[in-house]
Length: 382
Ligand SMILES: [Zn+2]
Image (cartoon, rainbow, N blue to C red; front, side, top):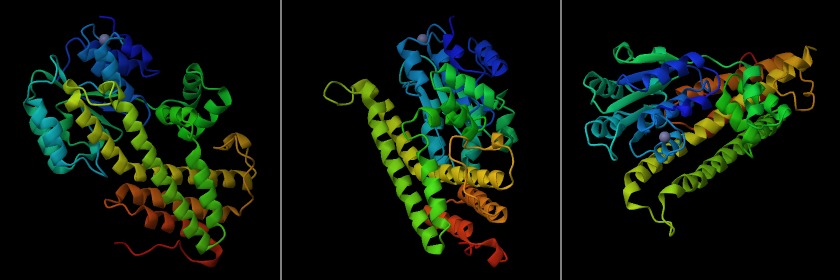
């Protein structure tokens, strides 16, 4: 038993020690609970590798390499489609395969991301599987809001808790990965304790691109209602471009499963179909994710305006790499900040997303002068 796969997860010693110890005789189900970016996904992949690798997670063999990319044929990954995880998804991608022979000899691993988003019917089906779990299957439920999982599910799982990582820890981890320190600092600051997000910000070519979009949209909104609408248009167009980029990523992910002529290898048809399904789901979520990142970046920019206007220490700036923020009255920045956060809350609740309307509403509120109105501008619901 080498289990080197676990050495690649920074922080979270207690959680990792527990999973490492469990890998030899796994329980049938685990909840990996902890905030976004605390390392749950990495840990789940490492655990899956340890369970699928004949050496207990060497990190080098084919089983490990595929599991570490969520691409092992015996690994079934479920994520929300839109806001929820639907019952059909759990039926087709958990319940049915759980009771079938695995695609390759060995265990089957089921990874349910954002498990708190299981619809009530989906949770019922999930529960049925957990009540009589097939002996060759291990279920990993990941959640940042694990307390929202039904007690009935919770009580059938071992709970592994991940804690939020500190900003200095995230900086150190990124620097150790080869990121230049100033960039690591900005990324860590903007991402809070979210190492995964910080890594994307620091290493993606366009990692900070959505902050530029947020800055442009905000300054457009500051010129009045027409500017706010133009700013919203900008955000929606950038979200569409982001979604297109995901399509290119899919081609790269499928690379290892294709022969020299770019055709799928027979043995991998099932794995390819699942990767494609997952990507199409990600594509459907892409707009929501992108808009949320832009609104979050806009919040950070507005917060910095408040810091600057109140003369507080520049240490408190969330975007320390940018030139000092424009001087805008605090009340106005605070109202705009509230509009962004309201927009994010609406985004989380919105089942049939209308991104344009939502962004327009946030930017119109952000652009309006609070001294001229009694409240933020809100369109009627529905
Ligand atoms: Zn291995």
